[in-house]
Length: 131
Image (cartoon, rainbow, N blue to C red; front, side, top):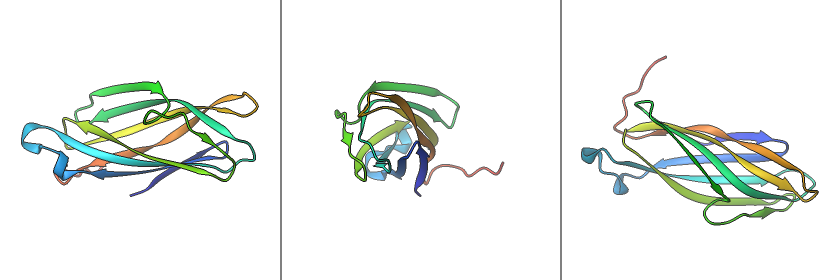
């Protein structure tokens, strides 16, 4: 499933995938990859400076991850261009949720935050709930 949000003309799409071959459910270890596409639909270049993730597992345990750039890069994204990367997330439960933001700076020096849409991390071992 693809998740998407747009902030100030910056489109963020996320597609998570449960990785069965890197998980050990019997040991309480579940692993997902997620691919992020960041598209610049504005008329001005932007640079991704930092990220903030909030990761919550099925038991409500929440972790914040902050740091410079993404996957060791601080990409400059020109108007009309897209930057794509893949990263991963381990959990101790068979499901969870991630949400976050990127801090960007445009070529005029203006800093702003771009929302990363909340996305669900679901494995075949998660129990569906009806709200």
